[in-house]
Amino acid sequence: MIIIYHKNCIYSFLTKYLVKKQDIIKLSIVIPLANESETLESFYKEIIKYITPFEERFQIKIFLVMDNASKDNTREIVEFIQKQDSHVHLVWAPQNRCVVDAYIAGFKAAIDDGSDYILEMDGGGTHLPGEIPLFINKLLDGYDCVFGSRFTKNAEMDAGFKRHFYSRGGTIIAKILLGMKISDATSGFEAFKTDILKKIISKKLISTGHFYQTEIRFRAKDFNYAEVPIHYSNPVNKIPAKYIRNAFYGLMACFFERVRGVKYG
Image (cartoon, rainbow, N blue to C red; front, side):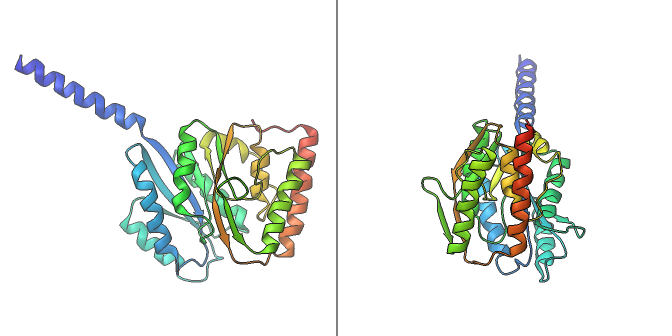
């Protein structure tokens, strides 16, 4: 009887252990960085604070993407943190030509790592780590994509008039021309099931500037998505003319994709 009892205990332990290991979900957080040395350490600590409650169910990795655009010692700080914390992984991509390349490099690193879910956010203080749980919980509810919105109930946008104008105006135009029903078409805080993101980026993105956020949401409009309110802060009011031109070209390209009936689902 003692032997049987011990065998049952061993079987029970192994079963629970194997089931637990099997149920672990892999989540990657992709964050491009450039010249963030002054705020990086506190930003990193905030992320760890808000992902820790999920670690019984998730294996979480933070992919920090860098290229030659960063001129300070941000890379050295990332390399130091990486040695101390297995969550953190530097993605060094000196071949990047634009911000879109940085995000794609991070996405590919997360996909190659076998992630089940991928969340992207900015590393310059515009997005709050405290809102990461909103995205994770919506993914757990079964949504394919979760988009941060600055223009929905309980959301807030702390930015100058020009950025407000382009963000709201861009969303209105995207709704009219691209058939999007989303409340914020230009925010960059978002999360995806990995297999869905792979479909969205299966074709090269047209945009080389921040319009890529609208382009991604346009490609995702036929998937099962949710929006969550976010608090966005960006005191920089200047928006380079080249980004506006690129946004126009990207908008027209997406419009003609809609006319042709191109689908990513």
